Length: 366
Image 1 (cartoon, helix red, strand yellow):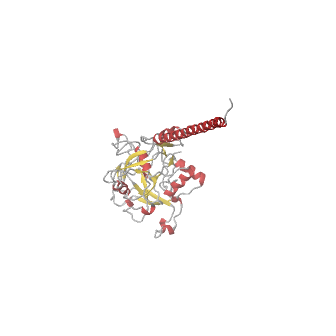
Image 2 (spheres, rainbow, N blue to C red; image 1 turned 180 degrees about the horizontal axis):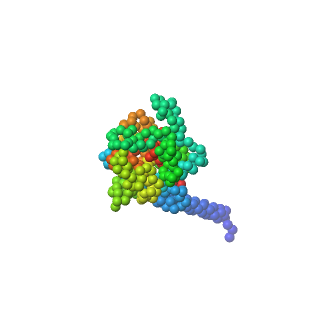
Image 3 (cartoon, rainbow, N blue to C red; image 1 turned 60 degrees about the vertical axis):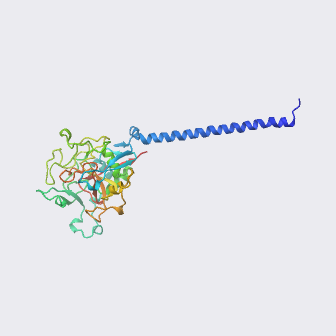
């Protein structure tokens, strides 16, 4: 029987509808595959963010440890640490951090490669220090100089002196050397010296929050980075001051000045020297009421970076902007400082180095 024009048109129309239906089905499959890929990517990133510590086993940067991000209680309730009140909740993202302070050997490599001259090695400009005595406008740095007798602890100039020729190569001044101290932390480092080294090494200084989170080693609310006892089972856990401060250091822990960066036990994250030995620079500007202002929000503070330079303020020395320092040093003692506790805060003018001040660096994930 002959096909009518209508039948022929109907037969021709069916394949066209089938193609459209097949195309729509393919599009749905492609959309589903795309959504599936996106979900996998999101899930993978969530796993990475939560369990980023696995990265420490995948080609870690030399001498660095991966610190997985998280929340912790920052600050201290110690009565003497008024600028560290109140304890408050802070969260940080994961980061790499140096296992130790930067050593003399590492800093010597940097200087050899770049020819860098530290601030302590430069002659100060009179224009930068108006009113300074001429005998102070010489290359040098600040050195701990113990008095010969007991003195008032209200005047730190009784034990600190600006010493001509003191610098990272000569920690106590002319005649001293680092020849036998290459594995000790480099000292007499001003803030810009630490930043120069950081740029050369492709790293940066840690924020105050990053530093404290790493120093605590996973312990929550403990007095020290190893627990609540200062000398557990009679073992010295850090390079600090023993005796009568500042005139008599008995050196019961084996040292009266800096020690090798791995001389004492590491913390729970495998970091050495986060208590005592030398203070360490952070990137935060100092302000005495930073924690109070932060805690007023009542919320967890995420990756805090401290106040601006214009907001930096130290009531004990108004008009001098300062950066936060952490960790304490071989001069810390419960008689005077005790800031070898992780919640304690130090401070210092960016242009000033001392023979108990160094640094360690961090690097972002990736």
